[in-house]
Length: 188
Image 1: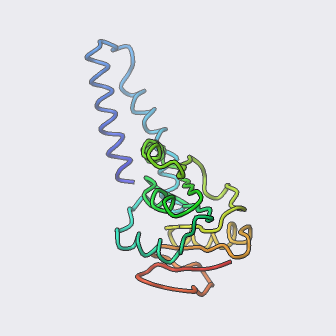
Image 2: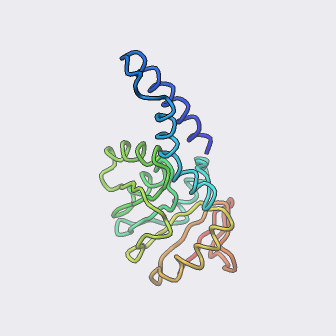
């Protein structure tokens, strides 16, 4: 959420400065701020409903990849992927890796980085409304309430054998197969 506020302040200030430098004073700075606010609104919604963007520590990141035990036939999804770091790492070891996020600035940044990772895709979208029927591995770093919602809405739609790796928070009422450094591995 903090990165969204920093984004809106910096980009808003730059646009307002450019408007005055190029004598485009007929465009109100209030419209610029309104536009940028609308740009970050989906990300703010996601921050409150599923979790804010908090990059995983490198050690946790490696633990998640190790517990997932990725192979070149795996299809990986990262729910709430942020800037896509885990998606890009997973793409190196899997058939393809797809990340979903609602933060427009993070998705744009992730899409830019995905140009260097041909098996990785970053998509703008609500993680609750996607089709994960082909998933063999799902990564998630969601708040406890969102983990309950994941178990209720997404878990029943996953195919048998799908591995779910959760960072920091357990899935409500499920016992993990493995637990290491606050990373939990489950299998449908």
